[in-house]
Length: 163
Length: 284
Ligand SMILES: Cc1cc2nc3c(=O)[nH]c(=O)nc-3n(C[C@H](O)[C@H](O)[C@H](O)COP(=O)(O)OP(=O)(O)OC[C@H]3O[C@@H](n4cnc5c(N)ncnc54)[C@H](O)[C@@H]3O)c2cc1C
Ligand code: FES
Ligand code: FES
Image 1 (cartoon, rainbow over the protein chains, first blue to last red):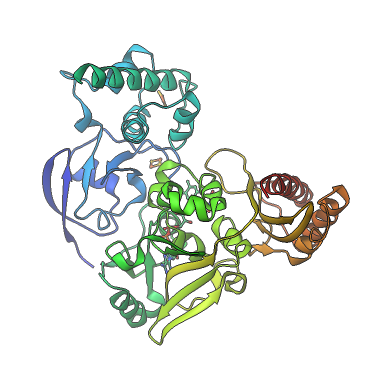
Image 2 (image 1 turned 45 degrees about the vertical axis):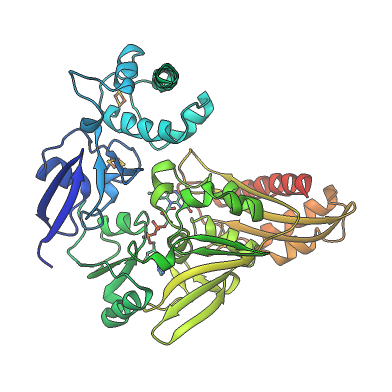
């Protein structure tokens, strides 16, 4: 089969492109759309560096075909915040040293974002279990867990203040 | 790691999907969550010319608990199995097992249908379905048929399903009594070194019925009637548990691989079965 028309919404913006069905979502994002936040770590569905949010689920975009993603609504790290307005999670990763080389960070934060949507007030153990699909070679995870717990506290405080 | 080229289809009904599978024969494959199939295609261990994506078929979705009967659509994801309160009431062993499968990202997309149809001895659901005595509902060009999970698995990646059949749902009677799914793995997210699914019912202090199935210890799941019989009629004392473990150890046939040598796997199988029996009994 040749290329097929693919429509995806990424970070609120609609894109239409031609891709072979076998192309992986991570390649479409990085190479066709220039969205290079999600990284390729293992390419074997293990490390979570390629994690994006697709229709409200954290998925490993190295294990999704472009064709499967046709019609999907996707959020990457670029859609969560930017240097002028960091997302609370990005801010807390910075403050709590939740990253060293930063390679795993976009996947970590994108996953943590969905995790906190589902469980806004987690225990440390729940954070560790909820983040089990993301590997980090640098930090030893301690500060990642701290950053996520701190972000949860910040988000809950902001919610309370708004009420 | 890019798979070979294929034509992509997204049918919106079971009939349309079956027609595609029938038309293209062994060149076609269904794809559910893709988290077993895509890795195999990337390694070029699965060659697929026609990929039939099931995501658009609403009839394959959903979890229903009706009286004592549980029906799960093939496309129900592991995430949905964990989240379903009705299922947790009717068959809590499914949540206990699903939480031990892979990691959160995989569980969002991995389906129960893909897990049981795959035929990989490492998959956790097939043994669990044998323990529950579940029925698989298959639809092909000739119509619908039921196959018991206990009759479904022939060898690694060989099952009773023919290439032009779709697994549409899984049905079982809600179990009574205590339950446990115990899995030993090298790290979180790994397939089992050994896993045990156990159901135990008690009448007073006596075990009145039991079901035991083991995972990743043979080229198919091992539902072990002799191990369960060793428990029935006993108080689940040490002698009975020893007899069950001995019967199970005789029924499994693990192979040496990167999860360890044969003797180690047999040892771990005994450990997980003992733990599962103890936990199931305490809940019965
Ligand atoms: C990192 C990682 C860790 C994992 N760990 C575990 C684990 O610990 N335990 C475990 O059990 N699994 C594990 N898995 C596998 C995961 O659970 C898979 O998602 C699951 O086995 C298959 O479900 P799927 O929906 O992804 O199926 P797919 O990959 O889409 O399909 C698998 C096979 O089943 C066929 N198929 C799918 N649906 C149907 C249907 N309705 N009718 C007929 N045929 C069908 C396909 O043609 C294919 O041959 C892991 C996967 C990964 C990537
Ligand atoms: S690159 Fe996708 S999981 Fe590692
Ligand atoms: S910060 Fe380097 S891999 Fe996580």
